[in-house]
Image (tube, rainbow, N blue to C red; front, top):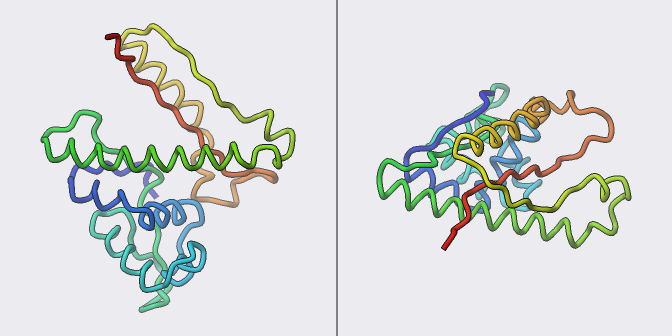
Length: 188
């Protein structure tokens, strides 16, 4: 599986901004190849629904058929660990589609963070203490912001192989959402 796929087609960006599709893609990245029926059971969706959404993801190169099956028993796999899109769009249509996907992704992050806040007290104390929620207002140049972004990504890089390879996960490892968001503040 390659590390990243970059979406530049506005149709692909809009297609990914769908709850079932983004869940399917995440599931295949974490768990490896699954049939539409297996994925449907894990997401509480019908196999017909997951099959349809898998084909939509396939249209844009986000998933593909994996070896080892045929017909309804064919497994699907993600083609990359990450999906990205340009920070600077080259057309208004790409910019609009990217904003749609970014708002969708932001809403999903907010839901996941809210879920953590709701269940935090029932989590083991060591996980509560290790988790982080905070912010820092920094005064940075463009180059410093780029270096900070790259440094944060390099901290996460050693753990990326574990996403699609469960055998690399040490005992006690859990999926952890590591958000890194940095943007210039509006000074007006």
